[in-house]
Image (cartoon, rainbow, N blue to C red; front, side, top):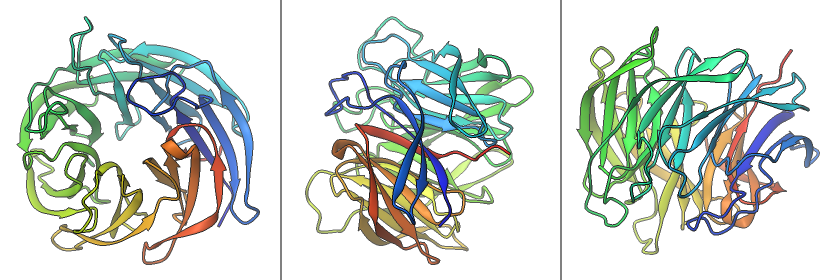
Length: 369
């Protein structure tokens, strides 16, 4: 396994719904699994609750959300990274246009940050936009909001589904559509997307099994299939993507926990294994990472096995650029654990972890040349 650089961010202000708020903010570590070492390269503390963060493909920018309770609108902050990742410089800041900013992604060109706002249950007086697109700016990091959309809908599981609660947004493989998972509405919303202007328009609403609570999503490598984890019912739903129209067709479902598990469990992160042949899903409660096989022809999911996450409440995870290592943010154990990825995508615990307060998001950052 090669040496790689890992960012870790988390909750550093009380929320009322996270157990702790011990995070130092944003940290970047140089991870050497062979030596069982984690060298702190840089840290940025002057930011409120960076509970989700992404890096640019070139590894020269970071984008962090600020998820603060009772803020009418959250925030998106852009940062510049030095090529050696030893310096983090704050650039610009932009409103998220909605409350409880939960997820960030980049469109396929890297020109826009897609922001998902989970939404506070009560009206806080903000714009209450489910989805906002912010232009990437070379100087300020983040520019203007170029488009946004409000969503509505409810589900069966109260109080969690008493209103629309978006949780993630991803651009399709051809960058012509954006899919938003709405936990509260038990639905996926598909927007037409015009990359030149950033304009969006609702094209499809896809209802999922009542009580699913869709959270995070992942496309297959070719973009032909979309997989989404159900936070509320511990499931994975797989859908076929019509790449011309953006329409989605449900083709299969499976559980993410054993059939005999009766205690509380909520899924969190879902991601495609580097091989593209399996999905990994984090289970909070069962405290495991599930490995789910994807049929290479039909795209349907099937639960294979689990491995312990190495701590309590695995909120997020990420694989390294070489596809050999999985870093797992165990939020309520104040630690990031590392798992080895085998050739068949099986996961194996390593005798190595990183102690850090309330980690809620992790990711590997490509190094500059």
